[in-house]
Length: 265
Image 1: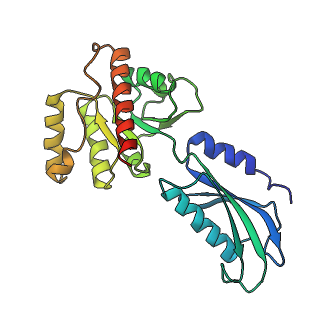
Image 2: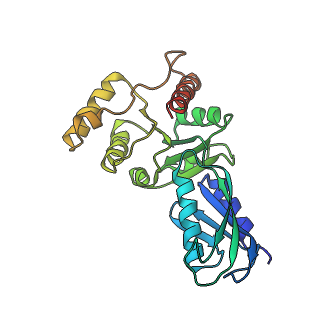
Image 3: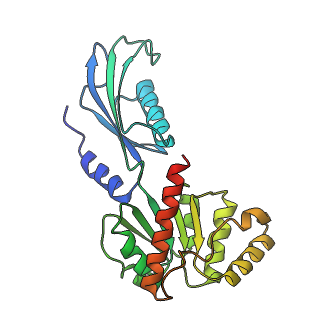
C-alpha cells in the first residue's frame, strides 16, 4: 500500500518544529488484519496526528505504546513489535501484525527564550551553532524577524507571552530575557501557577531584580520556596556587559547545566 498522501509533509513539519513524535509503520501482516502492510501513523504526546494503522483496538494500543515511548527518558529510538491480534490485543480476528515504532525529536536539547531583544539576538546566534532546538517568544514581530533563519529555530509571535508557559513540556531550558522585570514577572508567575518545573529556569538581570521578583511572586500567591526557584543573574562570571559577551557567558552556563542534568539521570 502506498504511503498516505501528506505523510512525508506532516513528518517533515513535526521534525522541523522539534515536536517529539513517533512514526508507526505496519511492516508485516499475517492472516486477517484490519489494515495492509505499509500503512503509517504519526503520534505525538496528545495522540494520533496523522495516518492510520488499522483503527480500533490495534491502533489504540499502538498509540498508547508510542505515548509511553515519548514519556520515557530511556526509550529506544527504534522498536519492532509483533502482536497476535487475538492474544495480545483482544480482537476476534486471528491475524498477526508487526509494527515498527520510530522515535523522533525525543532527546533534543530544547531551549525556550522569552524575548527577542539585543542579548537574545546574540544568544540565539550562539545557540544555533550547537545541537539544540531553540524557540523564541515575543510580542514584537519586528524583533523576531531579525533572528536568523534556521531549521533549529522556531519563532512565536504572541500578544500574551505568558500564555505560552502552558505549552512548554517541562524538558526545556527556559530563559526570560524580555524588556524588563515587568514583562519577565508574568512569565514566571504563569510558569509557577502551571506547576511547571524545568532543568533550567533563568531571568536576565541583577541580584536586586531577583529580590523584587521573588517578593512580587510571593505576594501573588506563589509559595516562597517556589517563588525563588529561578536563576538571576544568569551566565558565568566572565566577559563584559556587551550583548555578545553576555550571550557567550549564558550559553556556557547552559552547556554546564545540561551536562549536570545528563549526569543526574
